Length: 161
Ligand code: ADP
Image 1 (cartoon, rainbow, N blue to C red):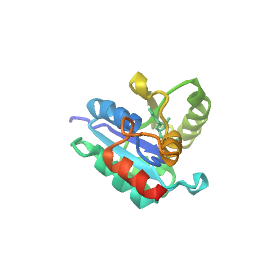
Image 2 (cartoon, rainbow, N blue to C red; image 1 turned 45 degrees about the vertical axis):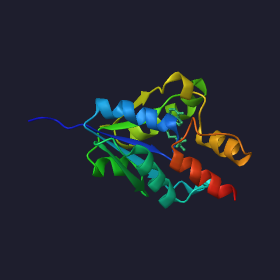
Image 3 (cartoon, helix red, strand yellow; image 1 turned 90 degrees about the vertical axis):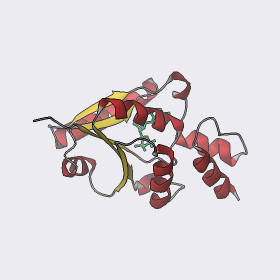
């Protein structure tokens, strides 16, 4: 029996950046299936609606045959179990990410011991990239085309209007 390994890549993706896409590209070569799971995350008060975040991620990630994008409304580990996923994938950019990721991975392991959290690092030029910085730069009229898909750039421009 061949074993299919599914990895869930959860986050707010407000909006998806090339850093996220870089990570998905790496994961797509390692796992049979990658599910980008976009959390509603109302506590972060996202700028883009859940629906828009899903649509933008789908556009940015088209071309990867084994990657799906979906919205997630329940507990992450429950979603992972429903999808029969063995891996939760997260990105590590700098030491600053570690503290929070360490807590999250510990909590998720406690909730679902059979699921492993794995970390990937993006290409170096994306290590300083975050969705919040992109929103800020775009709001102030800066150029973000090196860091996001053209559809995301257009959506950001539309927001400012
Ligand atoms: P969250 O609100 O869950 O942190 P994000 O959308 O900000 O959601 O990030 C989702 C995941 O992607 C996190 O693990 C984060 O560290 C990672 N990530 C964010 N930006 C980048 C980037 N530029 N390169 C690699 N990983 C990233």
